[in-house]
Image (tube, rainbow, N blue to C red; front, top):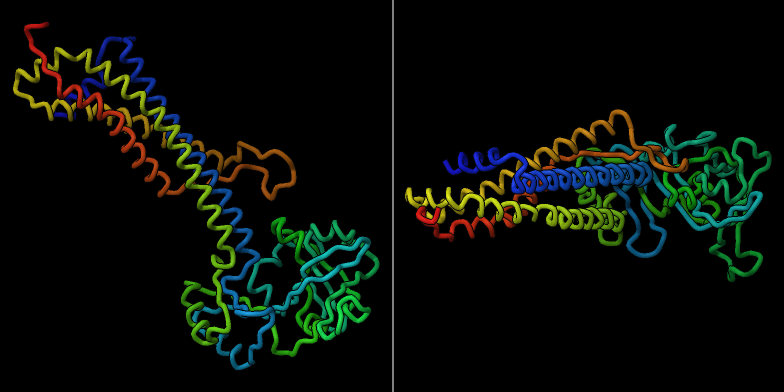
Length: 405
């Protein structure tokens, strides 16, 4: 019965009255606010998924590094045990070190030596990321390199056109002084490929083979800087098993822990965006206060009749509260449906393009999530209840007499 009264007040009234126009404006403001909130969150989700995907293509599911220092010793027996753990699909041994790459120009890089399993651990060797050449790393005697596109430009290496080998310089850890002539080892390398993942990696990394790096850094065959793995299922389960196997002298990290700062920043940014847009939505929703206050003044006679029929102040309060909720639910529902339609059109037809030509994609990515719709719906309900409470309470507290009409 209460809902029936609220619905009649919502759907009836003098045409083109001030109250009707205020209600329509409130409805429109809530709908536009809900639409904007869903679209912005969906676009943010799209960019978040894109960035995470790029990082996921470069970083391993699980990574083992020494707790102290840069080099660790892993025996063949330990490697065999880790490979046989449930969930471990591939394991790659890695050595990386700062180096100087001398092509046409000279630049500082991170030279990363990997074994043949590395392409099974990451997605670096896919057509999406390998722009030119191939992922050929050579061997200890004839090393080759695959460079990031930023490094290719900085060193002046045109991989498919470069006719001369480049030179890499690595620190000689056995030298008494790094400033002496013996402070650096050098070797010629052949550029064979160019990759592009994300600017942070493209301007930093150069890949070569593991045996060459171990030779240049005077490492033993069982000494590595890291072990990287691709796992099936929950990485935390594999992480726990490896940590228990190796002990406290090693640090075992999941992909999330390797990029904890990035994930925290993205989560913080999303919540910040949500709070700002919610404040804007709250300002829009408070039009409900004005429209309901005007409605209470217009319906004084109806309130007096209800009171004469025995309606309690709580019931009258609830009727006008439901009126405000109808404004919020209908406006928010229309807004979320419109947002879903716009996002679906963007997914299908890529209507809105990104400016510039240096991005990985040329359109705004969107990713709709049920949790965002639920969160926006709950937020709208709370804002609407707060906005409608004051005029609805005022309606319930008023005492009117039919004799005054």
